[in-house]
Image 1 (cartoon, rainbow, N blue to C red):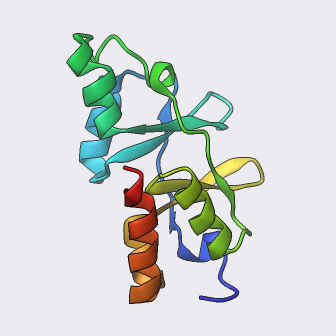
Image 2: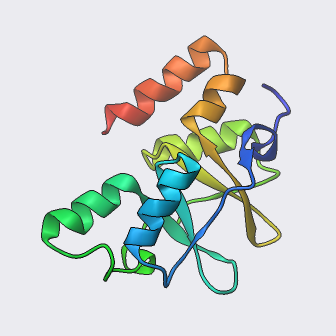
Length: 140
């Protein structure tokens, strides 16, 4: 793993949900892409946050709100990201410190990919992965 960067281990070509689009559209996009989280981007393609399937359930549906009436931008949280040229160790550290399982990767001010647990599983040793999972889930 030494010398690898965030860009080396990320899944590239991630799709954003626009901040003014509904949570209903976000859920549809998650289903189409087979993902549980989407980066939220503004009209300028700049990262505004991230939304998870759990956010939609807990912060919208469970509170009696309609997913067709609430925008992704209203629930934008977790503006944590890593530079594409950052080390994998730095990416892991950010994920651990923030207790997050998905990390957007930014290059030239634009999102170019996401690092997920699946990406880490492909790129870390069993011991490194076990250590990461222990630290991230310890605070969950």
